[in-house]
Image (cartoon, rainbow, N blue to C red; front, side, top):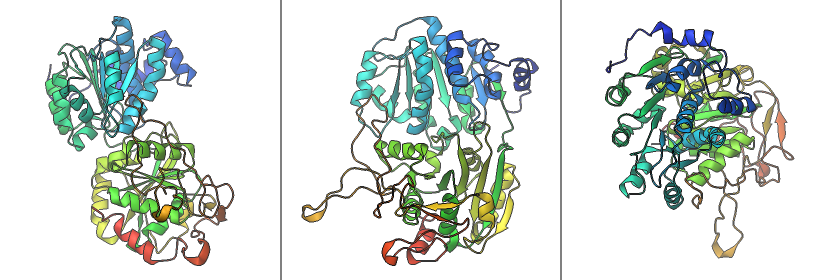
Amino acid sequence: MRGSYFGETPDPKRSPMTSVSTMSSFSDLRVPADLVEVLAARGITTPTPIQAATLPDSLAGRDVLGRGRTGSGKTYAFLLPLVARLSASGRRPAPTRPRALILAPTRELVGQINEALRPLATAAGLTSLTVFGGVGQNPQVNGLRRGVDVLVACPGRLEDLIGQGHCSLADIEVTVLDEADHMADLGFLPGVRRLLERTPRDGQRLLFSATLDNAIDVLVKRFLSKPVVHEADSVQAPVSLMDHHVLHLAREHRVAVVADLASAPGRTVVFTRTKHGAKALTRQLNKMGVPSVDLHGNLSQNARTRNLEAFQSGKATALVATDIAARGIHVDDVALVVHADPPTEHKAYLHRSGRTARAGNAGTVVTLMTDDQARDVRSMTRAAGIKPTLTRLSGATHPVLAELAPGERVHVPGGLVVEGPAEPTRGGGRSRPRRSGGGKSGGQSGQSGQSGQARQGGGRSRQGGQAQGQGGQSSRPAGAGSSRRRGGRGRGAGAPSASGSHSAATFSSGR
């Protein structure tokens, strides 16, 4: 019966534990053989709990409400039944009328979903198209006119295209909402409701989210018909493989501590509360010799794609992001997550922290806390259901930093300089490459709603060192400060400076 799903007792015949214990492979779950082969070619042979729990119902055509933490495998949990259904029906898409719709909150997540979809769609003879803002719409319009099976979209741009008569949802057979709770947090639900109202009522609907709460209950009541509910883990579970730490420190030491942690081997994701804070901290980290890129809503699509690619390739060892960008980051080997600004509520903490301990790997989560943030951080961790280890620091030389991020600290003079668009200089002089964190890059994607050709990061630093850390890099013992810049103008990570103090005060307070 349709209605609220909160507090329901799971059907023992469909509980996640039953599915996991009796279904040991995708073939056992009745996933079509051609799709099983695609997964096997990518080393994916064993279903995750959320996949084992939901696939029997979604493949049978039922509406499904699934909750699994970040990194739990939700993407394949909805892509497999979607592709299987479209392949079985055998219809061809009409111009401007896609057959399936996947809605996601961010451009990065749209791109990630489409990357996972593409080999499955190719095996089934299906086509896909991505639609999101920040790029020109003409390639997206042309793609819709040619006809497309699966449309992966952000709500805002899709509504714009529908309003202009470039797209109709009248032929949608399957609708997927991914990261529904994040769409609620971003205020996208009114647009999502309008889009769902345009899809046929007898179509299948799959809703997946990291949390299931009252913010999305209205969607369930209105648009899902007798949904089968599956929860693969506890709502508060932050993954047992994560180690949680809180570092209590003075405000002026935050930048130095972040720089020390991020200069250790491995990838680090650092979260700030604001776009301005992400940009400022990225600039500061690069000055201190930590190759870093930022990710936030003020960047153009080309810049976002370029920065994320630099991080994924290892040219940048630190990614500084805002909450709004957190859901689009999918890199399996992130060893450390640093909350430079503590999140305001526990759901954001769990989503941010989910960037590490992915794909069965362990990970460390560090939250920086000043005196005035202590009460809020205690409340937040309590609501998240975690008991972090608390350490009081007097600066960036505390030995706990080497324990949290072990290994020799490596610094690249000048950090990472990416090859952005040329910046004209006065008097006709040579233009300079744009430093990561310096704002928007020009140009728009010329591809069908996709992110366009990413610019190559990893340009040379001013001292001639490679951004990858080849040549000109310096090694310092764990816990040591950053190497000095030429001319004596830079300061070590552990030394207070005017610029360091300014950034420490602004990367969390910029609005």
